[in-house]
Image 1 (cartoon, one colour):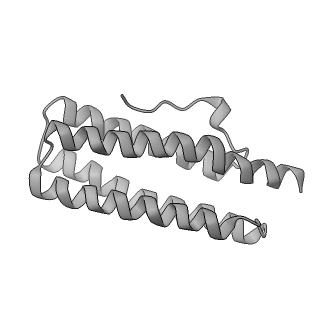
Image 2 (image 1 turned 60 degrees about the vertical axis):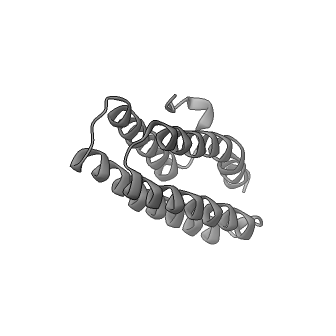
Length: 133
């Protein structure tokens, strides 16, 4: 399935938008590598990058929200935490089971579905609040 950047996903916050684009790009590389039957270092490296980068990205978003006193920052942080918990569980399964199709599909659904919803709704909301401030 994958995930493609679209301008209607832009928050208007350059750092956040660049990070979203890189996150989408790396997620697609991971999914493509799994679909191509690649294993080992490449797939594990991409999975680890995603794990690290998602954490860095969420920290950057939360810092911007804190600086702008975004009223919904606590709820937003909880959404990040819930996603990271789900992603961590899937990563553990992946490390144990490898890139089996059902698990890759589960990672795809979690990441693509959650990210599209979160970016298009929640992240754009705080971008709009920042523009209006």
